[in-house]
Image (cartoon, rainbow, N blue to C red; front, side):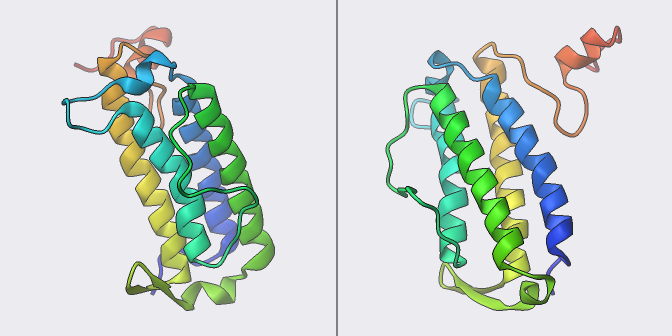
Length: 168
């Protein structure tokens, strides 16, 4: 049984999560896209693009379609292009879910990556996948000297702006 019980609940959660991701993406710079923890690790730009591309890729597997979406599109060199594409896909996906799916469909079984998932679990997985990689991004952003916006609470910079001492 899926934890996502209604399209309305998903939409409310996705609104917050996608706005938070766009806020994180908004602090990226073109130069920072190359930031890595290790030489062979994923770059900040790669992770941001992966989050973006997964919306179209995963939700296409779940039966939605996205005009102009190219699963194999190369990583853009401009941070603004990644953010713009993210916002476009995020909005299109949310609209399509609201238009084409209903609460009764959330328990439907779908073939996803060789496994059987509930449709509601696809939505939950999309949120969790994004949160996981967004967390990875914040570490790379700190290494790149970028400001990190708060998502589930104030960031170090936001605590300081509130006139409070950030936690160590």
